[in-house]
Length: 368
Image 1: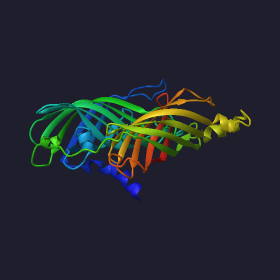
Image 2 (image 1 turned 60 degrees about the vertical axis):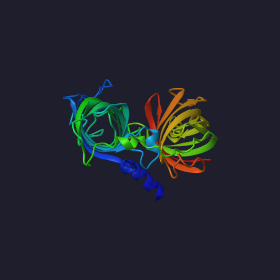
Image 3 (image 1 turned 135 degrees about the horizontal axis):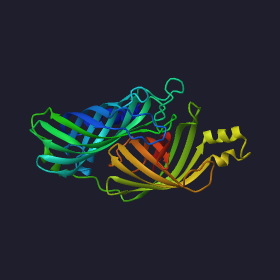
Image 4 (image 1 turned 90 degrees about the vertical axis):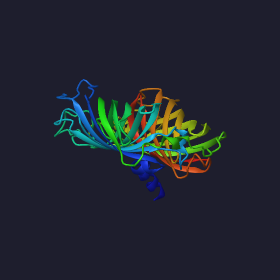
């Protein structure tokens, strides 16, 4: 129950995690979905998006992590999106936590970079009978992700005007096929309404409370995960198992660098080899992958954002590349900014090859 509470709090209530000022944002975006495949459905008109946001402009009054990241803007965004072809692609509703970082900060105007990852619900996924034209998305439930850069101008103490460019992405992590993914670049305009009495409390961002001592030691860790992927259109879903051992070290207080060795067993590949009666007696070897990985995790209190690259060390059936990738979130039971050893955690990641999602995995791990 503790792990479930941490994950739900992170996805839905992370904006409430530290002191600061709170605002409601409304944005309107207008762009066009990218046709990234020869058989992409016809795009009849431009895409548009309505987004309502809860925004938390953090300060350093109570928590450590906002100070380490120069007081970012944490948000929770509810979005409605039309893709430009209601018959084949339908529409999307997404709930996406986000974090914005100041690139430039002036008295009344700020330049901000914001990114977010969450969940989306699409109304018209692929169906071989009722919707065979949608080769973009193969399931209703998807990951949603966006990145944007924009200006915010303070019109008054309570009102700020926002405008800039953004890039929205929907994908199911290859849990179901097809999974080309929807990519929508757009421009947007919006407004931020601060429902507190005063302007953003920028004086609090100079808080001088004591930061934790940086951890310079090398620690070891182990991870075990299970992922799921579908073979073929409307085909069966197979598990993928991974196990790794490695080491990590903090650089500064918030940057965790990891390296180690990983074993991956792809059950769907083994079943396919048995089906085609190929590599007789070698199903396990041809379905097993060994790799050396190196990664970086940005730590935000109980939450970490992991990016990782791996180098395959063996040949296996249907190998497309020497390089693999992993991206996703880690959820810690204890705060790794304050506790440096004996840390259990869980994670949800997307494992990719050549930048294309291969499977979604759910992981448990332990930092010694």
